[in-house]
Image (cartoon, rainbow, N blue to C red; front, top):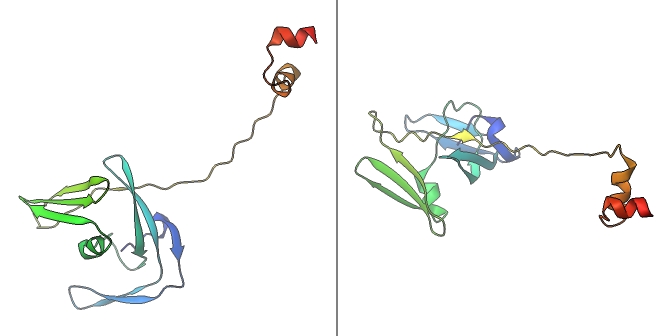
Length: 140
């Protein structure tokens, strides 16, 4: 669950749901989508993340990860999340407040379009003639 709309790489804002929190209050879900996060330098994609604008912190549901086929191991003040094919993908030490704070960065991907132009006609003909060497071009 996330309240940060910028974290989503894909978001269906038509999705609606209500989530009940531990203090018996409820928050409205105003979308569902995909989030890419970077953990220890590795980009992971989390699917079907709820977008809840009122949420101040991002939360990962271990139950939902388990439903998606991940294995969760909690022992010796450490939480490990394993992917069946990729192996260990996340490991978090327990904090003093008995929570497992996962330090992540949003792995925002921006699409880029590059264009190049050739100022020198010699290079243009070099490409047109299948990368013929420049001495061969002079001969032509």
